[in-house]
Image 1: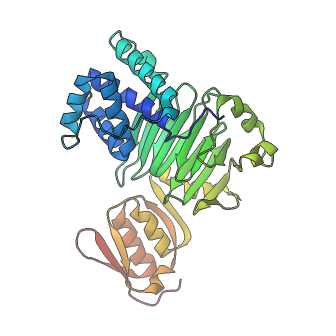
Image 2 (image 1 turned 30 degrees about the horizontal axis):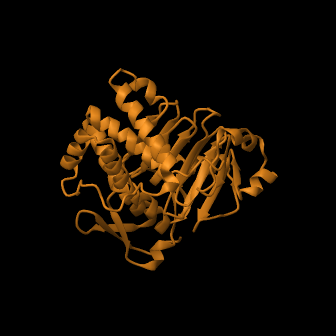
Image 3 (image 1 turned 120 degrees about the vertical axis):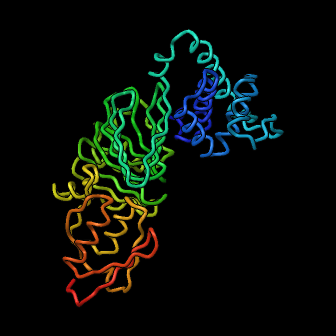
Amino acid sequence: MSNVHQFTSKDLILETACDWISAIDRGLSKDEKEQFTLWMMQSNAHQDALYELAHLWDEISVLNELSHLFPHRNSKQPKKRWLASTSIAASLFAALMVCSYLLINLENGYSQQLAKVNYTKIYKTKVGEQATYALPDGTIVQLNTNSLLEVAYSKGRRQLLLNRGEGRFNVAKDASRPFSVMAGNKSFTALGTVFNVQRNTSSDLELVVTEGKVMITDPSVAVDASDFKAYQLADKNAEKIRQINANIVTSGEKAVIEKSITKPITQLSIDDVERDLAWQNGMLVFNGEPLSDALNEVSRYTSTRFKLSTEELASIKVAGVFKAGDVTGLLESLYTNFSISHERQGKHTVTLTLTQNTKS
């Protein structure tokens, strides 16, 4: 596995930069320009790699396009070269070969064929928006509110980076290209699976598996095709699993990661699964959660922010089914069932007040 690197490794950045150079050379669509700008803004390493490859390839048309897209960036060859390290000379050579192949063959009508081998794209949703996407291999991804997902497929692996938000992944089977989602400080590898990953912060994550099983590892652990079958057949206590300090989560189970530490895996009831994944049907389900926690969940789907007038309000237990993003319906329910009134302060702030004694 030593020849397989994590998602943000330099060889993958170079490969993605090559894809963008070939795309710029043929002309970017409006959507592609937006995706390209997002990719460039994610990291200085992305910018440095693309500019230096453009210089090495002497792609004047690409450099001209970059000067229009990023007018404040100095397009002259930097004195400190990002690709100068001899340790990545092989990656650079491979990247240039890929660029050459792309630039030559795109003109000859092989772009559709190449797309089956290399695929990179960014998917995102706005606050309150949910969307479903079909990836080239047949995998179905459903993104929840305010999510950002980066997809990178190559011949040997399918790697995704959940920068923020939450996603459900119905993974197409392909043992020759293991499927992994990286979020925060963990990587989730599908072992024949439908699963849901929620990223709350960089170190707080939740995984719910509804079909098959998922292996949780550190991002530095890469899974290639030669190891995939063994991991797929291994049980939770297998030596191969212990060697890489991994956790196996099976159908109907949930893993919670707090501060990068995986807590004991829990078995979920059918009701628990339906509640955790109700967002996939545009709903939120609460079953005795403190009001403060419920409001934090509601806030993921709207620009409205809630203030509690007293600490007593925070601990009131709430239950019910609500449409995601329906602030008006929530406020009406709070008043009817808990005598909690509200006052709007400006466009995006609501203050909640307990109008009479209420048993929690």
